[in-house]
Length: 296
Image (cartoon, rainbow, N blue to C red; front, side, top):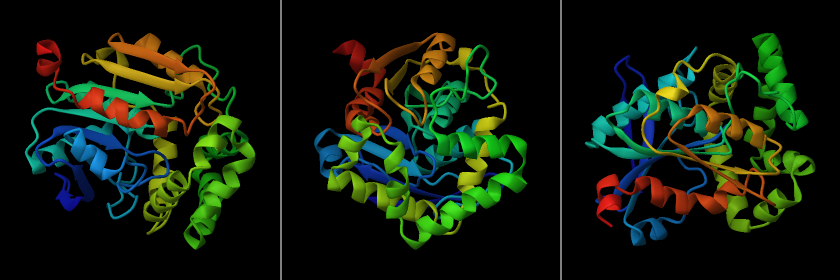
C-alpha cells in the first residue's frame, strides 16, 4: 500500500492510497458513510494476484482530508480527477459502495473521457427522486439522521456528534449500535472477525478528527446531486441486496430506470453488508479495460 497527499485546485489536501499491483488495471473504490481510505478492501495479496490497482481516498472532512464545507455529490468528480492526474491515470474504473455510490455515479457522469466503467453497490437515490418513497423500508437510525438534516443543521449536528463521540471512544460501538437493526443476512456477514476488524479500522480512521465528513455527506445526499444520471455513457453495474434496510433496494431500482447504460442485479437473501462479499468480483469487472474485454 502506498499513501500520498494530493492538493486540489482550490488548495485543499486529500489523503489517498493505492493498493495492489502498481502496474495493474486501475479502479477507484469510493468509501461509504462514514468511511475512509482504509476501509473495507479485499486483501492486498488478492489484488496483486488479480493484477488490480485500487485507489482509495478520504472524502473531504474524513480521515486526513481537509473539509470542503458545502460540498455537493458532484464535487467528488473533481477530487477524483485531481488524484488521477497526480498519479498519471488517464482512464480508470470507479466503484462506490453505500454512501460512495452516488459519488461514483458523479464521476461516471462528469468525467466521461476518464471513467471507462462504473459500479454502485447498495447506493441511495437522490432525495428528490421522482416517484420514489425515499424513506420507505429504511431503518430508524437512518430516518432520524436524514430527517434531522432536512429540518436543520441545529438538529443534525448534535445527533451525529453524539454518535461520533461514542465511536471515537470505541469504534466497535457503531457495529454494536447497529446490531438490533441488522437483518439476518447482515449479521451473517459481520460474524466474520475479518469483516468486523475492517469495519472498526474504517470507522476509527474516518472520524479521527471529528464528524465533519459525515455531516457533509448527509447534507449533500439531501440536496440536488449536481449532475444528470441520464448523461452517463459508460457501462454501469448496479448491485443491491434485496433485504437492505439502510439503503432500501428500491433506491437502486430507481437508479437503474434513469441510467441508460446500467445493468441491475438484485440478490435475494442479501442485505447491506453483503456488498462486501461481492466487491472483489465487481472491482475486477469494472477495472477491466474495455479494449481487452472486446478482444477477449
